[in-house]
Each structure stands twice: as structure tokens, then as C-alpha cells.
Length: 100
Image (cartoon, rainbow, N blue to C red):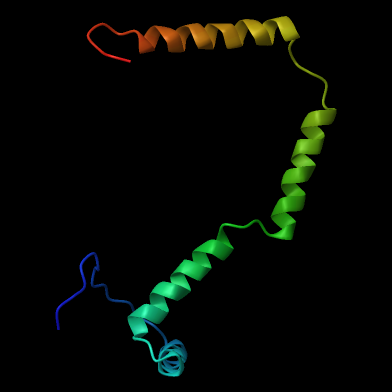
């Protein structure tokens, strides 16, 4: 059986119950098991990229604490640091022999 371009053959170890679920889904969808696995991984990735409510609440609490905390430096100190960073970045862009 020839493999499709761009496909990589891999081996996984799954428990019996998972294999049965995979077979049932593939049969019901009239799709190869590999297709079902690809779709499942794609769906899982999309879901796992989202924050849970607990993670969201924790991160919002961190931002709230940051907003309420008094500044540790003056605006002039921050502006001076930003200016130094910009100058440093500009210097690296102008290396001799390189086009922008």
C-alpha cells in the first residue's frame, strides 16, 4: 500500500478500550482509522490551546495585582531604558555589508 505524500508512519500503544472506540468511530464515519486519529489530534490541539476557567481567573488575578501595585521606577527611568533598547536595536540593523 503506497503512503500519501507528506504522511509519516508512526506506532502507538493504546489500551483495548481506546482501540475499540477508534474502530467504532472509523466504522461509523466510514473513514480510515488514521483519519479519525488525525481529526482527533486536531480537535484536541484546538481545545488544549484555550485557557480553563481556573487558569483564566488566576491570570486575571495576577494582572489585577500588577495594576494595583505601585510603580517601582519613575516614568523618566522607564523612558530612558526604552530609549536605550531602541538605540541598541537600531545599531544592530545597520551592520556593514547587509541590506535592510
